[in-house]
Amino acid sequence: MHFLSHIEKIILKNPHLKKKFHEVNLGLKDTKMEPVYIIFIGLVLLPLWGFIISYREDHPKKPLSDKNQSREGKLMPKTKTVALENLEQKSLSEVLLTVVNNQEILIIKMPDGQEVVIQPKQKLKPLPLFEGYVPKGWKVSIYSEPE
Image 1 (spheres, one colour):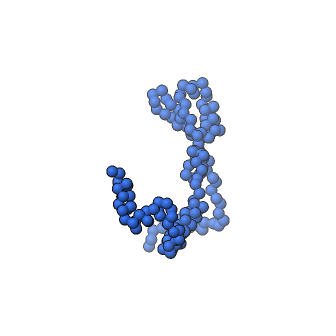
Image 2 (cartoon, rainbow, N blue to C red; image 1 turned 135 degrees about the vertical axis):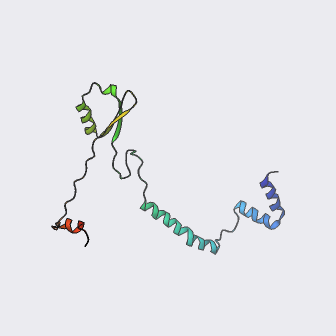
Image 3 (cartoon, one colour; image 1 turned 90 degrees about the vertical axis):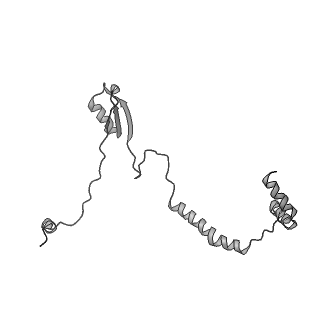
């Protein structure tokens, strides 16, 4: 005998449980909300829902379209792998100019399985200039021996 059908038979033997069982199964139960449920919704569910909505607005999903993005949001250079035999016809200056112009990392596979990596140097922003001055004797006052 199936477990649920056994429970149904037990419920159907008791007239009070039978009435409740049919009300729940048929959706005939009175739809009045108990005050406890209203308080529960007001104190727990609505604030939780508000928190979820505000969290989603404050933390939007990042687009997954560009897989070459680093954590800082800057594009990482593309990587290109080439066998040494394919570069023998090109001059060194050609290869280097291609790497710099395309801003890509070039990995050259040697015949013995080793790899050589050539990549362009990242351009740094210039340092900011601040107004003001450094007083004379600052080094002496900082690095002098305590008396």
